Length: 125
Image 1 (cartoon, helix red, strand yellow):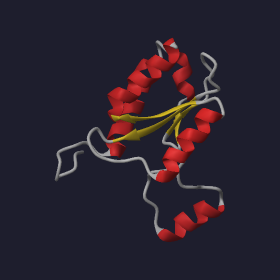
Image 2 (tube, rainbow, N blue to C red):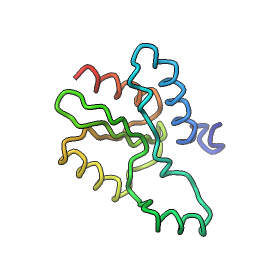
Image 3 (cartoon, helix red, strand yellow):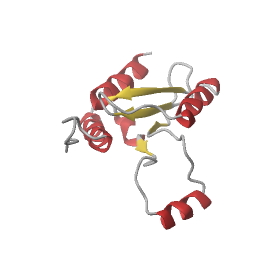
Image 4 (cartoon, helix red, strand yellow):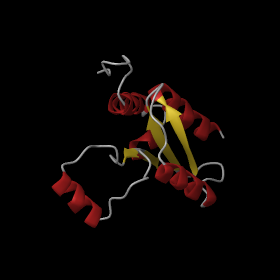
């Protein structure tokens, strides 16, 4: 699906495409079975959002997590944005800085292809 104003894939669609790539790539990189999404960008009705917040859901958490240690990092966190639009929130910027200070590889990517390259670069070191 694309956004009618820009004909740019939505962030959701980019994330679906990324996880489809990961599924196709598991035979080469079996550790991809441990890759998961936080679903922080999913819109929730107000009542459910309130329940989720009380249960620990919070702003700023990055979209994709890979709890695989490599090359001195404890794991990988990715904030996936649309290819041309979308900006990091202040909470996301703060989260990336925090994760990096704690020894994780963390960053922002644009589109599913860049996310796949980020994973491959992480593996290679």
